[in-house]
Length: 254
Image (cartoon, rainbow, N blue to C red; front, side, top):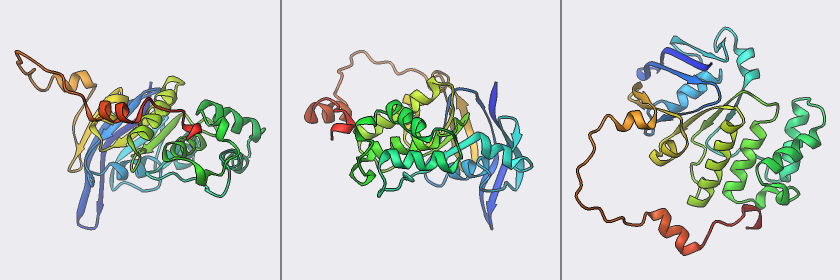
């Protein structure tokens, strides 16, 4: 049931040690969040797992294939979405999807595109140029493009970087939908609330090492509960934001 297995992963750039022995497993069909501040080594881990970078030491396997000795098999099983949406703004949303399906030499690219547009609530915007899309719509299209060919594992490297609060929620819904359909998701993020909302398991990467790894409930047990006699609930910034702007609107109507 293990989709990703990492053992003793090390990586240095000249004298800078970025990874100092990283270990973790990701179960199939789960969302695993790799949480850490900028420079913690999250993107380096993703680049090694996606065969874009070779480790200095340690091993890593994706769907049972070694990322170094069986790189071709790994690439066939994964998809990678980086920090910024890799979409063609001149093309429409549907044209972007059809193009990728044709590049992958898949049959019926039009049907594949239409199915993904419906799955990510982009049907009404299918013929519009991507240049007119909101940030959340672009990111959802980017994720949809990465799913062409049905890869069992997808890497999302800080997928909500630069998005506004409403667009972030749109992406969160899309990520939850991936796991619901059985896709294994490795998510890197520096946002605590993102990991809390999405992940089945959370690993905190700090100074090149995993310092804690567990479910949200397990991580909360690391700290004793606070004793509070009276609590007055204050609205969160999210509550204020949506109270001011109104309920979330359908992204395709914006």
